[in-house]
Image 1 (tube, one colour):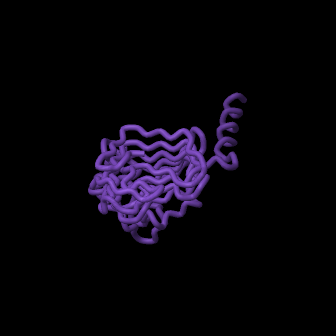
Image 2: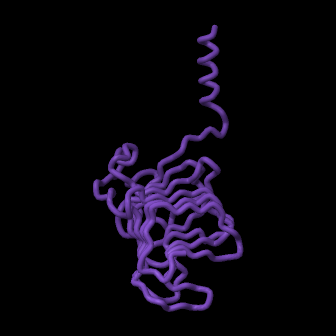
Image 3: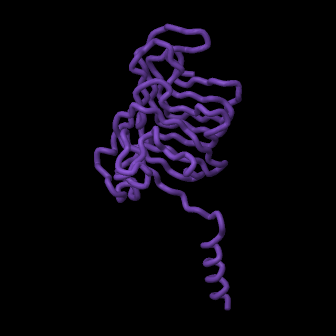
Length: 212
């Protein structure tokens, strides 16, 4: 009788409404196939990510290469269950088993341009962890140097619980300013909302007017 009770409990737990397993989702610089993020053969590019389909605990895997379109965070995780944005490594068994895997994907993720990692919508993008996973695993470079730019990483305000790890942010340097805008800022805070519980760990900032 006890054995039946345990088995019934296990079966019941398997069908609890809302108990959804976290998904691995795939991004390459230009996307591929149907661009639905389901595997490397059908990877998203940053500008076509379906943020409405992303849930707390989901893992967005970035293939190595040069990205010329911005990653604009459009979904929120939850306390203790963030959304992860990670550079992929060849030791990730699920990623290497996904259709279309190439060994070259295990290389530095390079974003070129202004506001390439962006929380542009106020009060959107809570509890998101962006992690290069190894030193300078993700690199963000402003190739224009001094000029009218908002910073490589932009927050629109109202976010909480964001973590940035193993990211390099750099530019050509210079000291040109525009009112309210620092031309080569690593992390820029826009809008009137607050930013709470931002953790920056193992990141490098150089060649900038200011880091934050």
